[in-house]
Image (cartoon, rainbow, N blue to C red):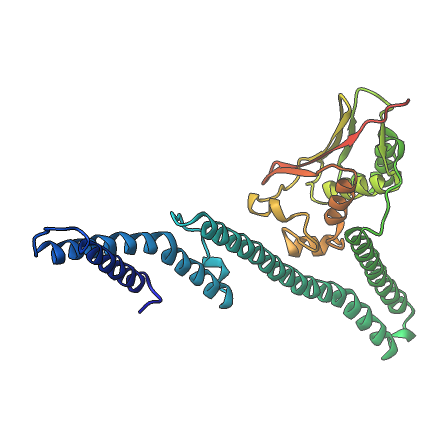
Length: 345
């Protein structure tokens, strides 16, 4: 009984009443009823006041703290919320500390769950992406071993297809290594003055034949023929290869792909735009994920490892920038990011 507010209030109120009653003996000529009436009034008043004070300032806070510990013990941190209290400042501080600790732990748990989910998805994606070219190449080789190798026309055809699948597998492994090294921070960017106009023109020359097959026009929109930025030449070259080749890949026949360069004080705004099939809004926040494809069947048919935009994202972020995408279905897509302009000393 003494372990709650009512028990303690009862004991303290009784003690006060006894002390008050005993002290009345020292007062002369008091009516007889005073000796029992005043102690009763003191007892009742003291009990109510002490009970209220103990309940709201201490025991209620202690119960809240105990409930928080119970939720922590049962790993039920998601339902743990701070409560508005009026208790002693020390108890309030303890409660806030417990909530802060639980909030941090809950965030860590959620992050671990998310990482575990990503890891499972990543392993599934890697297995699936490797399985396709391996099984294809394996099928062609076994067909040749089963006798088709004697037919020269079939032999060359199957060997070329097997080689194509193995080349795709090699590209996938190389992209996986690149992403892995970037996420681990093992790749150091070699920043140097780079003429971004020259980089874009080199990419256009490299992809000109591919664009011509679809009747796509490649255009560089820039008021200058020399714009120096501080960047890793090789990695930025890789960014433009991925963005422009994707723009060509997902553009319709006789479309347009443009790269716009806009110097802006100490930054260079870069926009790679196409007027192709576009990306549905529900996919925009996931296009930079590893192996994520908006249209899986079409993407598979057109090739690619599914890691290009993930690599682009890592490279751009390593240049202290952020890549953004704006797209509407049927109207094309626009990828944009910034680079630091080079300032000669």
